[in-house]
Length: 370
Image 1 (cartoon, rainbow, N blue to C red):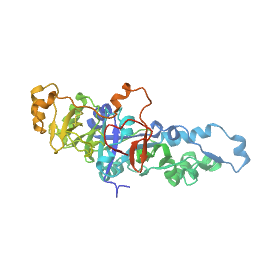
Image 2 (image 1 turned 135 degrees about the horizontal axis):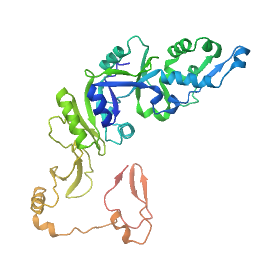
Image 3 (image 1 turned 90 degrees about the vertical axis):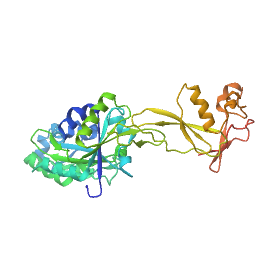
Image 4 (image 1 turned 120 degrees about the horizontal axis):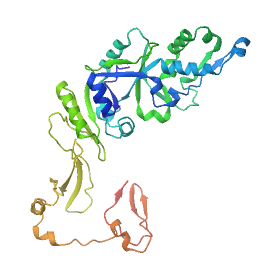
């Protein structure tokens, strides 16, 4: 699985990362019974085929629970996300941060896939190990690999429940472990599953596989400082997920220096003296900055009149212009409350959004592109 996959990504809470994963430099393959998809942990719709009347007469409803519990309680799984277009894409998944990293307060571990595979193989020992990417299907999709996986002969299973079911899992592991409903497809999940009846989880040494840590935008200062200390001592790359219009990963935060990414775009067609925007640093601090129509970019501190005068001059203006109000012409959203008529109506003409022909007021600004 790892041949064409350089990195995998494991999202978790700051508490789990600090108290367990980073403290011991291990990742746990936990019971499949603990995963958050009830279709996997609790509801497995097995079909049992009886070829003799004796098994019909002796059938017990508890057989279905036995099969489901055998699969869930004796399978140990590690789930990670695959990267999409690049490294940044794998660590910038909104719903993964929200669901698995406790609303952006946690972390995303960036793991070298090949070295992680080696570590899991050592941890598994002689136990059967299955790995692969998860495929996503509608439940009634006949191409779903899980369809044959849930059909067993009753008599064969009753003759040797553990041995027969282990052989069944070996033949149909893709359908049992690597097929999920389409609602989960955005997770782009890959998995490692160890089958064992030892009744304990497995722990994988990741000291050689952990290449980086990405912290969430809402992580506390206390947790961030603790994680940074670990990264400094272990030469682990530390970055932050920064959310603006596009989202990006910050620079390496080990050095303690804070930089701001101001990449972005704005319309050159709107007549104006300057454009104001906001940028976010790697630690989530926001800064306002202004761009002149000549391309100058200057950060704007609040409540500093003297600086503002210098700012006006830097943008090519004169200080005396500050007291001259600009006459607003046309119709803008800010003036909706001033008119006693319906809100503005727009229509697309090609790919350009224009004011509807029945509207009397001109739109304040130029054409808005879709």
